[in-house]
Length: 221
View 1: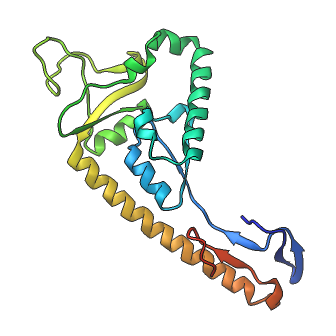
View 2: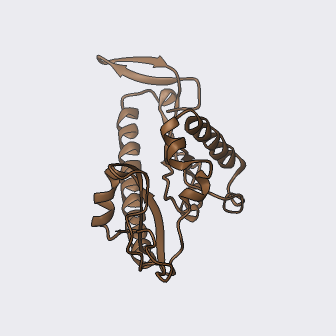
């Protein structure tokens, strides 16, 4: 919550001093397995910190990581190392992916579409948003989008760990734009509410003990 050594709180009408005097608001964005590196970079440019979960780690190449700050690349590689340790210690995953996990997770490209993997608990929501499942090729003549074989998945048929899906790039871009606007509105509202709460608290404090709010750009309110 803070980056200085003193803060003031009110308890039962009595003013007490504890730790931290400056209140700082930041945001942490959790990356997902289908996160677009461009979107993650945009969040960083807005002042966010990207959190990488080994279970939701997006497959980013060295080229895609190049524009990212050193701290973000380091966090990504640490999560990737944990992901590797976890998979090597889990026999079911090794049986499923074999020795070519990277190749298994790669999906064929289809012009004008975005491909990704979804967990079974995410599938219904994805289908509601316009995603369709990707199937295996049944014949060599079948091109992207024409596959008629079984659904492409990682794991057993009755216990899939991941299911391959795709959606038109235009629809996905529109969804991302809508969600970005929604997030910005929510962030602005939370920021204003936070500043208002601090201002209200300051009315009951001596001037020397009042809190200062530092936003993401370092501006003091």
